[in-house]
Length: 450
Image (cartoon, rainbow, N blue to C red; front, top):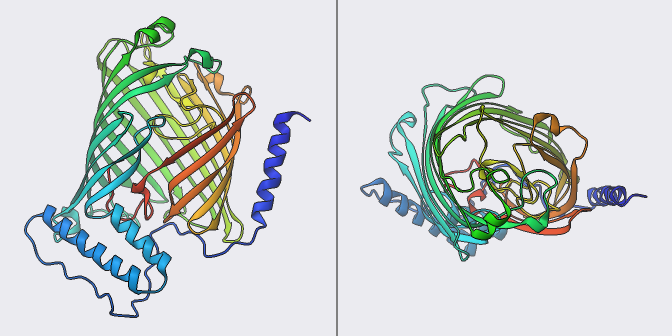
């Protein structure tokens, strides 16, 4: 029996065995933990004194929330749910918070601070806006800083959802990133390191429309400055690493259309989501590096019940179209293998950033269930490839990877994950990631930028 088939069969048997295990505790929820009965006044709600200024008000509100959470944690029953509330308010919500996670894959663990301010919270909802400022850094010299302003246009509502306007700016300094060359046949022996500075500013609006659809538009300004060493230049040149010596700046208008079923998400039963986007990367400095990019994603989920977990299918396609006599800089080409620069994990049985080219296609089938709240396990099989043309993205020649992850979840979003991925070509790879901004579910309250 071929080794690859043996591995997939073994994974299938393991998946079935996990599905039949008894499950202690309750199922994960998609939102923040549900309110618990206020059966005692041992820890009454804290009075928030009126103070001038939104910043000071956010800090006072944060202190009141944490003080009440701590009182409930040490004096009330149901310790674990109370600890969840304390952790959510410690890392998210109004005020100044510690933040932890990564900057980019291969950059090491990062820590920093996030300041979240809910401005004019007493005004009508259409006049409110919230801001977040966050900075993170690692011991290896990677760092990022950013700010975000969000506001709802509550004059229009579609099934309780209103248009959202977002302004965001960020800067990343990434001193060492691996590059193996272009194409799906690049050699690990060609691995070289380069640095990259990445600055961006964007204004976007997302408008819900009937039947679970939403339309979005964005205008962004982007700036990239690669830093390549002499050893990098001894292996790669302008043909094998386009833009290696060029600082580029772009204006990028982009439009998107998304769809969700059911509209507010579902923990169990059938769910699906899709999004397509098209962006025009207009190079305003650096040379002939203008291109267009189409991206599409389609996800399907089948949640069974607390005893049996959930199955999920995810797919993604990226198609880059350089203008006539233009090329796409190597540092803007999509990657598969391990995690990409946005921490999307495809082909975990390979090193991070392993394969890179103009176009990309990826598929993943996974099964996830809770072990003991909040710990879970996820088993996955992945197929993906990159190509220089759209015609290269067929089913032949797809690279494969399989493995499992241990997950730590609060509120339906992964706060931390440790993955073990295997491929027959490059063996076992272990990858850890996390983000405290995910605490409490992605839709619960104020949180940082990244």
